[in-house]
Image (cartoon, rainbow, N blue to C red; front, side, top):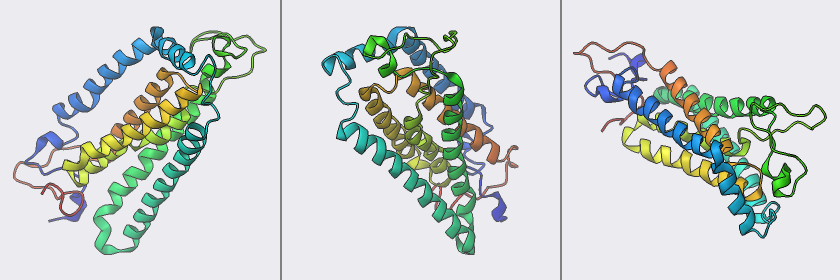
Length: 259
């Protein structure tokens, strides 16, 4: 059998894992999109302020956790550095796989994971420079000096630019939802663990920033949407575009996949 077929997520006998299958697109594109749209619509039509008001009041009418060790140093700074270190760990693994013929099956999936996480973070960072929205701590409602201006609102010309939407720090966590597709290809039974890791990190990073007054809930939801879209799009781009012949059985992405 030809090893070049290793990026099929499962064998042709398990079409539910094949990227071009309609069920795959329903469960990985349509369903998440509908759920994301529903929650984001709630957040942007009052949910953002509802949650931020309560977090602000809980801290005594100020952002008491803005410079706290737990939120700023441990979750924000250390969390960012840990995510960066994890990415370099994946890069090192890919380099080892490139140098060792016996690990050739791991080159493409590791390359996917590297590219997907970088793409998600880069997209969020690029949008932050364009959207011009303030953080909660900048708003007069929460002790700042600015009035709130929505995404499509016209800001006064003399007002300093905002760089708070989407949520940058949460992208260091949500970018790892790509682990779902990585494991879907190399070891499908671990895909939910990979998804849990990405969602868990994103929720932790995002909520810590909300406690600091750095972001609204919708900022994190947009970051999650971008990260998932990047991971799914790249997965589809790197997977085969045509279904294998019915009698053919494609090799797994890595040794032991599908067992």
